[in-house]
Image 1 (cartoon, rainbow, N blue to C red):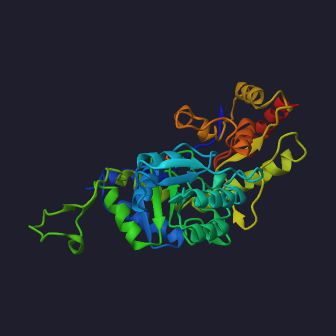
Image 2: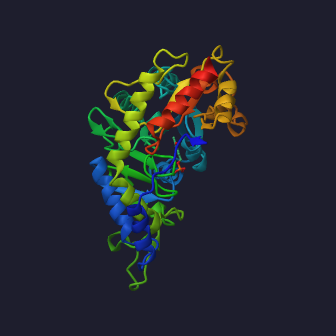
Image 3: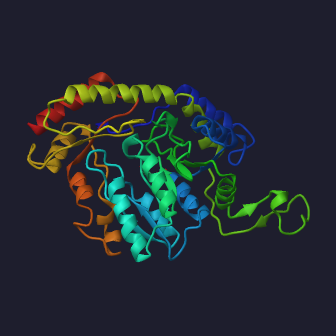
Length: 384
Ligand SMILES: *Cc1c(COP(=O)(O)O)cnc(C)c1O
């Protein structure tokens, strides 16, 4: 099976991990701090907080921004469930904003309309989480304008988008948001096994997230409420979690990050090659956003119902041909958990239609031209 995504592990990655295993620290040692510095430098930002997953990063980002019961968090239906679940962890109400049918990112016209209605009803969100779908930035300039006007915080879910840019600035610079979150799951652009990071330009948010990832505990003398009783002393100021990243993971991430540009180059070349070879085929190719340069986590085509008997049939045929196609994403509001919270079919028609037609083709830095030709051949067979 040619997988839709796959990690790239080099001998240098393996050596980096082995050297941690031979060192004094397996967790909370120097590798995490080095990886955080490298991520922050890549984003051109002061602070990166590394954690054990992007899901954890989203959770502590919401907590640091003060999300709680009675608050509202909005995201899009076209995402992994974690972008919505983080609101539920905090006891907030989750709602969704329709996607743009051309880019599959949050539609800013729908967002503005929903905000105007919410202002009248007294139901404005405290946090909005745009998702940079497939690695391509949302219209962050517009979202930031709306954030100022309607006074909500913004967390960019950039799980797909490390290495991408927007208006010539790196995704993660946080010029248009409070916090940006990355995932280092093995199918993403770079990996730490499991892992994630939250980056921010706000030192207070960074400090708050650092405490939340480790039980709400601080060891910083300037933050103590009581006098230190000795070298062992620490204080717990809030209810945090154990969301720490291990040094083993961080060393892998640090090593992977040195190859990020090469990964991006290969992904971009493969995406451009799909564009060229599939031009004129019966599937709809991914749309481009002006000013955004995608990191190409995903290459998603749309299979309309009248092509090849529809997406499900095309999926089955391609799987049978050894092509690991996938679907990103099943609309989150139609998951049984969210249906039970009151959402239903028809709530977000553009997201639902997209979700019925989407098919993710294999795309990763290790995919060869020959494998890509095999994918294209199978797709043309399956859709004709
Ligand atoms: C992968 C992903 C996440 C969750 O990442 P983990 O590191 O697996 O927790 C969240 N949001 C989006 C959009 C993702 O693709």
